[in-house]
Length: 357
Image (cartoon, rainbow, N blue to C red):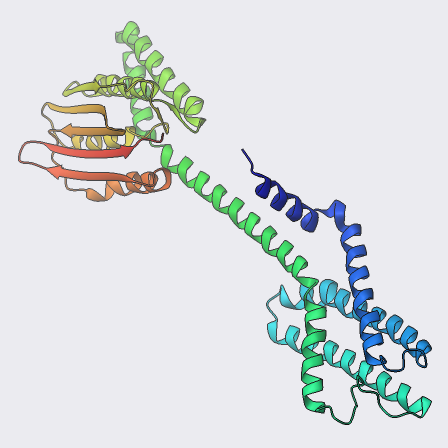
């Protein structure tokens, strides 16, 4: 539930960024620049404000137009064409020239106004005798620079937010694509072998052929439709594993497998096809052996963790096959552990996943 502070922050950000409030932002900007221009004019001719009434009016109007011209030039020309294109040197030079022109104009108007009326420079004039002129130039340069750059911060903020949003969307799309690629783990070679087996049995044993095609249809249906979800029930993934291993056993009668469960396993939500890579990992290695082998899968829920182990009598040395598994786990889970234990008669992979609450 949003707090009042969050709602206020959202309203302010919406006002500063939303296109439908653009006209109101411009009106507020013009109002503030007008106040600054009038104040500068009155400040410059403060001692003789009645005598220089016309000069104050002209300087206020002139300052307003010059400030607005400089601000909009910075917003719509200098920032898009120079700064956002990383031409920082040219942008700095252009902004320096614009601000220098504003200072030169203000100083010339001050000087010419006093000279035209034939009076001495007042206490608040830029050319008053007790003022240190270089300091006057520097201080006014900084003041005018702030007046030009300040309103442009909203433009920079909008571009920065747009860039951050696009970068975030691209990152999400990249991660989604990578996850989809890593998720599609069922080997095409396995499917071709099953179809080839079904073709061979079509004449000899039509009933077994029908059983193979039914099981294969379940696998493909799960992979094409159910696995497109972000998460599925673990029971659905276990059914997929069992169907996969039954089909593999039809291809290779030397295979023996078991799937055990402890605790409330079935209704856990997990990313689809998370465990099939471990099974394929051992099956890939078993293609080189001609004796009976086994694969044991164990699932256990304990203290907020899903503990999974995959053990096999298959001996293997190709550790690189686990890289895809590790990469997918890194994308899906902040904390996990994955270890491979190679024994004399059995190889085992252990994985611990912290369940989200």
